[in-house]
Image (cartoon, rainbow, N blue to C red; front, side, top):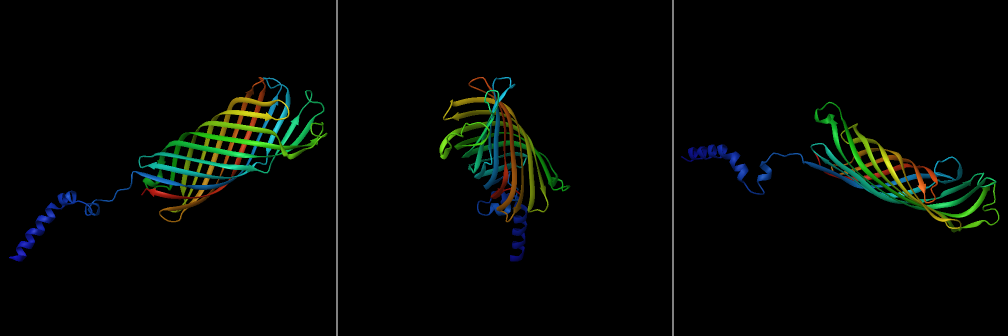
Amino acid sequence: MRGRLFGVMSAVLIAASPVAAADLGAPFAPLLRPTLAPAWSLEAGGRYWYSAGRNAYDYFADGAGTTRISRLDYDGLDAHSGEAFFRLDNAGGLFLKGYVGGGLPRGGTLYDEDFPPLFTPYSKTDSEASGKLLYASVDVGFTLWDGRATGSLPLRFGAFAGYHYRHETIDAYGCRQIGGGNVCSATVLPTSVMVITEDDTWHTLRLGGVVDVWFTPAVKLTAEAAYGRVWQSAVDTHYFTFGADPADGSGDAFQTEAVLSWQVTSLLNVGVGGRWWHQQTEATDAFGQLLKYKTDRYGVFAQASVTLGGP
């Protein structure tokens, strides 16, 4: 009798198991439900970026750019920067990524040249240069193809559109005559005296592509490149001559970046990489005179991040 009753109860439980699994409350229901990959995954972390920078521009006598009168070249602007970054991925292919950071350019040199016929003879001076750097970027994109989904290739391709912000202020100290002329030859200004400040802000709208290559399940190479349309606001302040001279303009930009990362654990990632920003713009100042800028910053970085979600 007991054996027959046990058999009936077992049959009832087996027949009712789909309903029971749905009706059971915590903590038993999660154990009975199938495990599904999260709809979203997030990678977030920090970077140290060591970069070299240069910002040079020619200054013309009019808006047509026919007669160059001066050239200012801020070179050797090495910066130590810290930044935070993230990438948010949706299982359907949508992603959002970005970073924000800042640093202190140091050890640079301003070369200031003046040309005939406005300045006769030709003059070249140098000054010590240092300042601050702020930057941020945000992109929204879509994964166009992921070979891992079909098991064909460990590759993933995506496209994105976004916005990049960069603000750089460089102060020049002292004045030393190193070629022709007599701008600073009569009295050498010490490096404790600020002579020029260059304050620039660039706003860039960009379009680009990104590729991920998995060499192993834990080792990945990510590379991206983007073209941008950039708008610039600049203020050149000469403290001993004409004062502040604001200018506004626009131009073209490109940005590239590559990262080799290693997934140490299911949570922790580390990596090394490099990036290059380039901008080329033309601006008109308050006097209606043309300025042609060429700006670069490039360097290497190390990063660490955590990953939440994902398969």
